[in-house]
Amino acid sequence: MSSENEKQRADHEKASYVVESVSDDDLPSYEDAAVTTGAPTEKISPLGYHVDWLSVIFLNVSKMIGTGVFTTPGAILVGVGSVGLSLIFWVIGYAFAGASLAVFLEYASYFPHRSGAEVAYLEKAYPRPRFLMPTVFATQSVLLSFSSSNAIVLARYVLVAGGLEATAWRVRGLAVGVFTGIVIICIISTKWSLRLSNAIGVVKVTVLIFIAVTGFVVLGGHTRVEDPHANFRNAFEGTTSNGNGLATALVKVNFAYAGYENAFNVLNEVRNPIKTMKRYAPLSLTVVFILYFFANIAYFAAIPKESIRTSKELTASLFFTAVFGNSKSVTALSALVAVSSFGNLLAVIIGSSRVIRECGRQGVLPYPRFWASVRPFNTPLGPYLLKWILTVIVIIGPPAGDAFNFIVDLQSYPANVFSFLMTVGLWFVRKRRASIGAPKSEFRAWNVVLLFAIAVNIYLLVLPWVPPEGGIYAGDVSFFYATYCIVGLGFLAVSAFVYLLVIILLPRWGNYTIRQLLERLPDGAQANRLVKVPNSELAEWDATHDEHGDVIVKSETKQ
Image 1: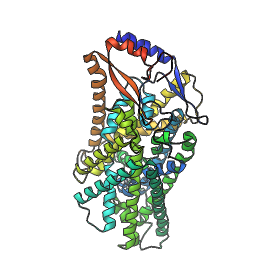
Image 2: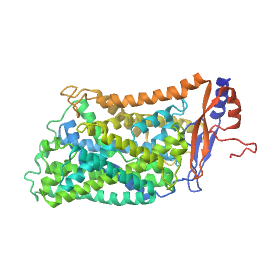
Image 3: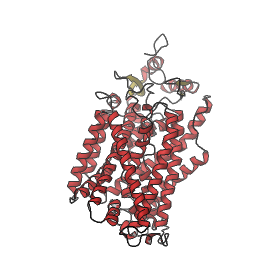
């Protein structure tokens, strides 16, 4: 009886689609009725519409310009071996980010009223098996939803600016305190957290412009740096051919560009979302690329190559010291880098809170009403609290030393898996839209761009397994070089096991079927709740609920 009901339901879903729109000036969102899993579309955002074009720019800019350009040049140089290839990798990173941005833009043009970016797009690309992709992505997102690395770098720069010794527990305590303050700001007001993000974004752009201009002054021979052209002679000397080093360097570059997609996480809070994203998301990425490239030239002009290689997370501080000496300007500029890190955390928390909220609204996390609710401050309180708890645990728990590089790499590997799946899945979405007769969208990425994005993702997934030149313990951590790959795949395996247990095995053993029930909260939010329907009652359930879990009443209107 259960399999027969499932077949009838599937046949009905294949033959229909749902058209949803918010206003006359927005393109409709064509929702294929076969895509019945995932969070419901909130036609009016319960979080409001505080994200304007300026916030779109600085949500992306503030997430990209955080700690990467100030902390990763040394690790990238170690990976590639030469100054010349290091600069080329920043260009490659920009090209890959641009290709990936095109993927996000096309998905957004199809689903303009969904926040959460990847969590929403993956559920649309892979509706079968039911609940698989939402479960795997939600489990991974919850387990890895911490921002400890950026908080630690912020604390280190604050201590440098204050002239204090950066002991392990001093760094951890300060990181926890600052992160707590940022979370409180985000909880209290979305409007003011965005305004603060915009203001700090202006500061961090100014800092990078200052570094770039100072680099040109250094190259002109007008500073205390004795030989500013030394690193540019034989710029490709020392270039490595080791796959692991090159892959690790590209991971670091991608980490520095991570954030070009941040505004897509709040897409449903943007008026005229597609027009706004098409104009300002590429602009934000291009501005950041230009600033990154010239900042790196400034570093190589002022700091000896070997010093950069061993700089770890304080490359920018070495630059300030080399150019200005141990003066008050060094302290001031270190403080500005700390402010930049603060803005990065602010932008990250705003965006990732929406990702967690969308995971909760899908119904695959326990207590979906808790995740979806925007009370009492009209902000996603539940996701903010989860992010705070996990970040504090990761700041305090891991030992000092290799933890920073390991955490960055660990978060990157599953992200590359999902990036690959999302790019491939775009062709599936196109095929389904064509089958239901959906009109042409406002944006469509070139196939060659998608193929390039897929190629880079495969590179990032395969090459980290190639051993480094010095052996299995010669990576950017002191233990086994591919540990982060193994742990990252382990997180995905745990996610798949959760799906197998909760969605497949337990219902089979308990003689029930998982269905989703649409819930409407008093604050205007909507969420799906997964319910256990006994197989003996499944026919009645399917007759009284539509494919999205909403109750059908006799008048054919929805409650």
